[in-house]
Image (cartoon, rainbow, N blue to C red):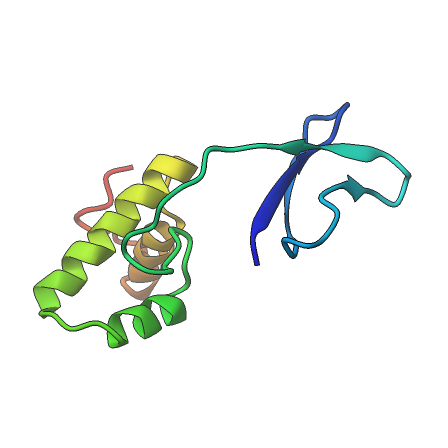
Length: 115
């Protein structure tokens, strides 16, 4: 089902809702405030249904259905990391990896952790 964005008219907070194409596309919160719908440009995903913010399990399932080499897997992983950095300003999966790596080594920083 498609995802629709709604913006609060006073606070500017944006939320996303999954709604059927047949639903009435409006959102009224518990206080009775009708939120404004946010229209965005449609995006084309030529790589299948893998989103930028996918979990490790979703990534594993995605690559399990594809053919290719381990190098292809590393390239795809790098592309997703770059997309997360572009969208979120940081890559939370990479940060989590660096944090766990450091924790296992009594606080030593990962050689590629540049922040």
